[in-house]
Amino acid sequence: MAVYQDREAFIPYHRRDIIELCVEDGQLPTADVEKFRDFCEILSAYYHFHLHQSLEMLKDNFDPFNPDADSEPRIALGTDRKVKMEAELVAAFKNILQRANYMALSPEMLQRAFQEKTLIELKTKVDFDDFEQIVCYYRGDSQKITTVKKLFKKVKRNVAVFERVVLLLKFKDAAYFESKKVKSDRLKFAPGKIYIYFYKNIPKFDLELLFPNVKISMTWKDRLLFGIPAIGAAIPILLKVIPQLLLIISVILFVVFGQANIGKENTSKKAVRDVTPVLVATLSLAITFGGFAFKQYSSYKSKKIHFQKKVTDTLFFRNLANNASVFGALIDAAEEEECKEIILVYYHLLISKFSLSPEELDDRIEEWMDEKFGTKIDFDINGPLVNLEAIRGKIIKDGSEEASTPEIPLLSYDERGFCKVASLEDAKKIVDYVWDNAFVCGK
Figure 1 (cartoon, rainbow, N blue to C red):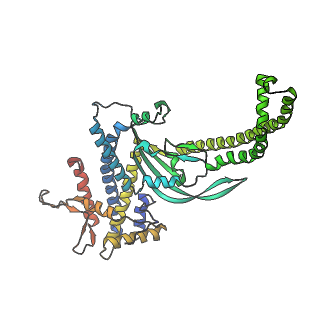
Figure 2: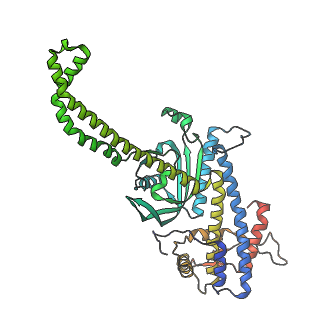
Figure 3: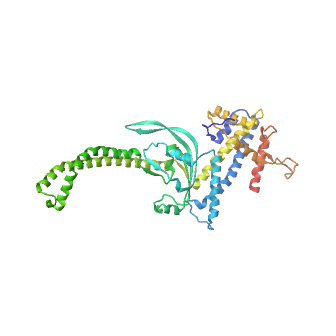
């Protein structure tokens, strides 16, 4: 079984397309085509119900931390209870993301991504100390072409993009921000709450746009453009001014205290005449530098406005869901991915003329996806095998008693470790049994 570092487990096609392609593959007997469709339908219904329980658990544990909550709990929760609910929420959230074939981005990976050069030349900073929890996952690492302005023309540039990004942030409590001398009315978030974001098509170097506490400032390039020209222009003037410092002091004393304090009137007039060109040159320098500084500052402000517009566009046009609504979107994605994986595994074991090991099955599915769709994936064989083996039901035959009938899994292994699945007829009965008893037993 090959492992690919440049592939993902995500199957970028709808479940219905996978089912129809299996049918169109021509390997199923005509009599089994409808049975196969029925099996896929009842399997999907079972997973929809099964994952609905996970959705309710996520929503229940999120309630105390929901910044959009519009209801109060009947009983106030203690600190220990809230800590436990937070831990259960984060663990279940990560589990759903993994089941939906998302990949984790650690805080270290995020910081490295922040160091990538952005299309808008501004310095950005995210203070990770503001958070108690950071969970970031992505799906779809691809290249997209974008148009950027360079000097006086527009050029096309390849940009590394995450097609889906999910971000969970738990902010520290109010006491932490008070210790930083940050006023609560200046915060764009509620301390102690959890914020969850779901975005599409986010460039890797723009991940900081998703953080509510992002700060922007001038780059070193902007700062040097402020300082170097000013220093270069000031040096000749300073060389001329320094020898005249005594004369400048004399003029100041003459104006403030009168000519008696600095000597004869002709000396003072001479000092004024000598220093006047220096003062004019100094004033000229100040005006020139002021104009240049204003121009550079205006450029910085323009970049800042452009950055803020990009933040607004990202948060508005690329946003898929926020907070509690993210759970529903991810549950749907997990249901879709798990059903596609199970259908592919079951189908290839069903039509195979030879026994297959898990490794051989993994390779066969990857080759089939490449052949049929032209898509290279790194199929995760372990998940669907575990799921198929976990679906166990009874096949009640005429005259047999349910109590004495053993449960049969959809997938089992022979003595050599090769996979084998129940026939379509038996598979439908097994899932039917599980589905019927799900409401009775709560399974």
